[in-house]
Image (cartoon, rainbow, N blue to C red):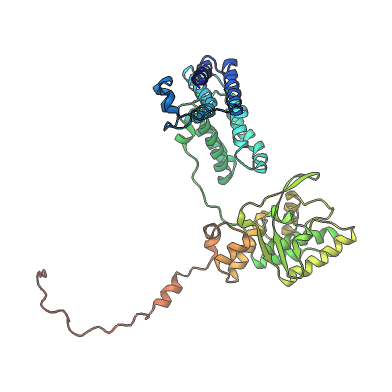
Length: 426
């Protein structure tokens, strides 16, 4: 077992110090990592006697003992922990060395080889794919700068440029990802501190919820000629989104098997990740609360039944929101909204605005926040109130009116307190 300790410490030393002589992980460091991994795998195959680490305390330096959880554990646990630490040790030393030597490692190299693989492993695949092109485009501003040369002033100018071109929420998201990237560089010892944190993100501006009122929706939906197959399709898209408050991914993923015509319900159990007409997939909904059953009104059921008949005349289509057997893409929905809003002379809204419109409709009908939360599939009531709380009528004066004359009192004509002492009199 002492031989095992000596070999392990030798390999760890080789891995740590072998990385310090270059701006890239040199062969010694990479081979050291492989040797320790192989060594650990070989140890696992052997039938060894379990002995406590304290037996070998003399073979470990004080520095080595402090690196691990040392409390009489089996020495195999020590090997396992140091093996897990090895790569981080190498990267950390490499990073510190590159900083101390004023490394010319470009942000582009760090972004592509270190941050992107790290980020990809920590978010859903669809999130990664959706954001990849955006962060590549926006982060390109720093591509040819070395990590150590990125200063707060450079970041401030970039942030100002983003704010001039984009909405507040977009800028906040991009900046948050950039700050995350530099956080990773700090953790790996490649820069001493995060300059993006010094600058700070832009202040969050609460965006006004854009939606159609009941009257505005009536004007828009009345512009569809249902005898036309494609217009019938557009009608169903807008009607279903307005009357259910579905997220666009939830709506485009709907199949006829998700509708229970007898019980008049719609089952939301998936969302659609759409890349193009031949590449799309079902994925898990946004949150656990997103999986829900939505009750449908009689009019919506009637429209859906008629639309299914129209689809069946075309040979049958699995997707509800489809006119050609292919799931509908966002561009198509945006085009339909814009075209018919213009015809109705009503302001244009985003697709997500139909979800807001449904929430507004429910609130105007006097529905409480909990009911709205469940129907929209929000994770908590705070999300609902934070987004739509301002749409609820101001009950402040109603409360004051209710308090009028509610408390009944009959004041005495003379003091009931006797022998008042130590009372100041002018």
